Image (cartoon, rainbow, N blue to C red):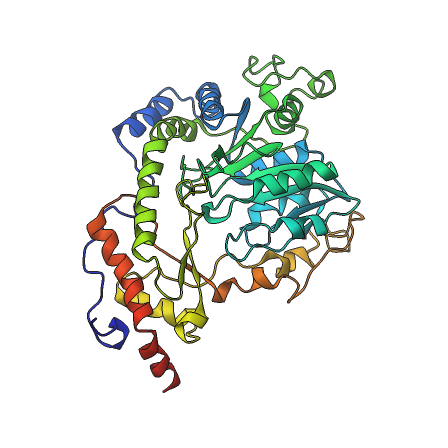
Length: 437
């Protein structure tokens, strides 16, 4: 094997990747769908969005779907629909982007962060149960980096304690947990469909549920023109409310938010959804090929479910690898990643999302100028956690690394990227010698 590139040898990656990493795939079909909306000035309408919702609900296997301008708003609406309010708590993972849980603060609630499992990177069911208190109202579960969380265990916990369960499917569109689509376990599924996600529509979100009452609450919260009541400026549109208690608010959203999706995005979403299953399948073939090539390499483990488990990674959004420094003589992950970057893939980085339980937003921020941190200003139980409280989540910087997200299954390209990782692992000793020199 040749010398490592970081020490002056030739890089392992020499092929031009072409469009291997380009996403989303946009064709003439997408362009025409968007132009049709643009030409008739229907960007702020609902007709295309209602079609997109119906198609998404049918695809994922739920009765109702509501489109949103962002995944952030779909999660906020899900929490409100589930009854989360002032003084309450939700339980969530700390290794997600802020949009996966911070909406609780806007509702006067707080976040009790739970530990994650070291290999799945998803919420640890046992730690979820330990954190349930008298004001816990909901559990929010992210299928992190596409890995399906243990929904059988978490669903049982939620039912046992009478808690609502919200699935954040932003990383895992189309993923399966033991043969069942993620997003269909919880009371509500909510997710981002922005342009970097597996299912990418430009900017937007989606909420899905089988519960008519939750669906109607979500409609009333932010879809003011879709209550089924004719307004002076618009006729009734999809999403009609039957609850008289909610119908009285027609014309003004209960949450004071406007949740209508721009129809340029919903038009794009309809086309992307039609092609998503085959594109997702190709991504799965490519990513599994990459990890199969690295099977047995010391220090490296695939972040994916066992092949015979019936669970899949969807489109492998934000794919990761698991690092075992002890198998490479204690080589720090940062040095391993630097060597991979030198081999020709500049995106190899250690770590993942910053653990939110350490962020000042969840400790000291006074969002509403109440003279007290918002996480406790509404009478919430003080569940703030400091350094060392969630060691698995806090240790990701040294145990998790980024890997290429291939959009096409082209063995000649994928093999070179796998070789870069294999080469560095095989030459870990030379990296250690240089480090100690």
